[in-house]
Image (cartoon, rainbow, N blue to C red; front, side):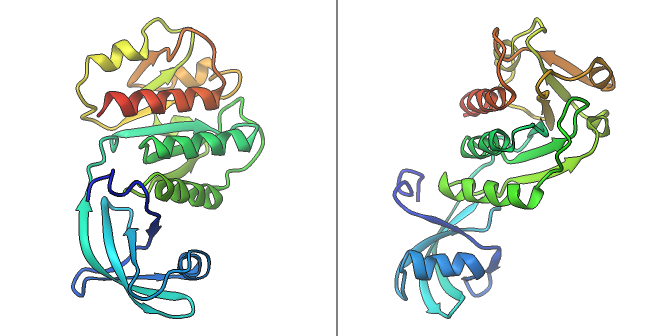
Length: 238
């Protein structure tokens, strides 16, 4: 069950899997979508992931008003090549731009996100529940098998002891040169993107294990930088 075989299917999500019986249970909105929108019935094959690395080819064996029982026929496990990559994204003034960047990053294989409030962020509060739904939908749309995780920290200094990469146009070393020296990212690394106006000097000097890089030679909007990085890291880590 290779990815090209999956290219024309719709992927659904459920964490309710009984390995012992070989059955997957889908409830709520996901079940209603399968039954009422996609018009699936008993005997139909559907593909399901629990977001833990596997995609299951299954056959529907039971339908209720808001529940589906599906029997596992075949399963395929995939590697998460970017499991050590965490994107640290500031609250942007325009949530549409932020959500677009999150969606496209998941499509490119990113699975770890930390939203933070930068000194130059807007006053808006995070919408983690909404953003998790966007990430889950992007996972299914792009036929990914790892459920992306998103969290929020009020201050980026909470990550001061982690392995931090900060991007800014003013730095000398290019990201492409840095990553070319590494076949893979063997340790968890936090890639920090600044808000409009960039990080303050106080925020940058607060990190104890810091590498500074420039992503491109020209200035990019925050959401463009996030997507550009996601494209580059996904290609380089294949």
